[in-house]
Image 1 (cartoon, rainbow, N blue to C red):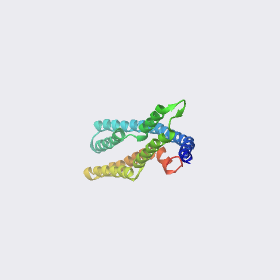
Image 2 (cartoon, rainbow, N blue to C red; image 1 turned 90 degrees about the vertical axis):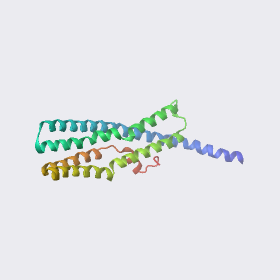
Image 3 (spheres, rainbow, N blue to C red; image 1 turned 60 degrees about the vertical axis):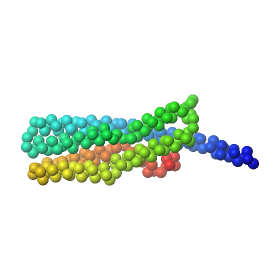
Amino acid sequence: MTVALLTVPARARADDVPRCDQRLHAIASTLDENARRARVWYWTWMAAGTALLAGQTVLAAVTTGDQQREFIVGAGASTFIPGLLLLHPPAVIDDARVLDARLAATTVQGRVGDPCEALWRARDLLARDADDQALATGWFAHTFVIGGNIALGLLLGLGWGDWFGAVKQAVGGSLVGELQILTLPTGALKARSLAVGWVF
């Protein structure tokens, strides 16, 4: 009787190994693909933000009056793109590498040593990346982008009476910021929101 009871957990665990292995590799594949897209997004927006900053700085130096103030304000707003990317790159880029390294370290002859244990770590990383993407695309991000550009527009309008420049900054800056938010790859967030069986 005792022997039978002791063998049940072991047999159940053995039955779980293929399922754990399948779910583990599904999560790893999701994070790898999401990280690949996030790297493209990151460097694209880093280049775009840097170009906007440099271009408007140069134009501010060779213009005068309202145009100069518009370019100065625009250049200041453009610093947020590369600045925020440097301070907070998409978490999935590093997390995908962390998970791949962990799996590589425990893989022998093409098989992960303990896929059920590794699955818990993979789920944690997926959850963290989903949270990061939810924050980066949530209401706060939209409010910050639109509200910030409206505030800069009001600075031009109320401060210097340049209402045409104010509208350009409020609308143009908001469109660029929204485009950045809406193009962020959100593979981890989508995987969690779909509530697929292997996720949680």
